[in-house]
Length: 111
Length: 115
Image (tube, rainbow over all chains, first blue to last red; front, side, top):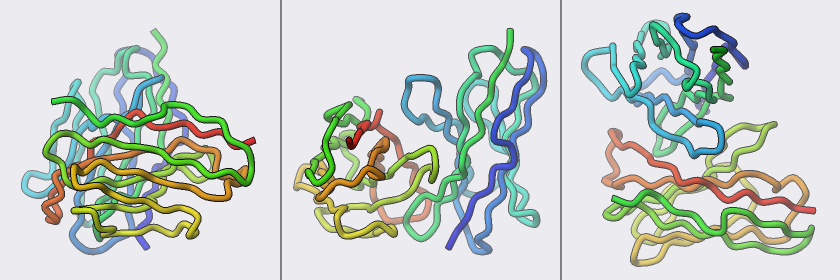
């Protein structure tokens, strides 16, 4: 079965700091990769996705992610976080007709 | 387009009861998937429906079942509720073409508390 690992359970940053959230998956075949975000009190929203092509994908709100096939990784980055980025971030892998999620990373940004 | 809607948003039930949750997908989407979200297990896939047929199933007991109607709306049923069924149940819809390059869009969820 597919597994998705998010390395950090809770990340605390100050505004303007840079962010990188790690994500690794186990499946060796072709996968589609996603990052979803869940803001406090809101539902899961799509941040960005990778299907094929350029391994560096850009999403909403200044987020980007890089797919490194050799490392089975899809790390999320943002050069400068804002207080409004406080949320829970989920990495997900789509294969065999379903989404497999990581356990999530809670990001807290202090103003 | 309106997003995925789920009803009810909150439910309180007691052990042994059964519950039915409803999901209306984004207009034009034909695939509906259900997920359970708990602090202990995270987000876990329950099942997926497409064209009124279950197309994929996760590793949940038979107490968890679902169906899809001809208008793509879906219901999920949990019978003989247990305390451990307390969770946020999320519905997601996608176009359902069956290809790999599909994106699932999530509803707000139904928070179920079993007492």
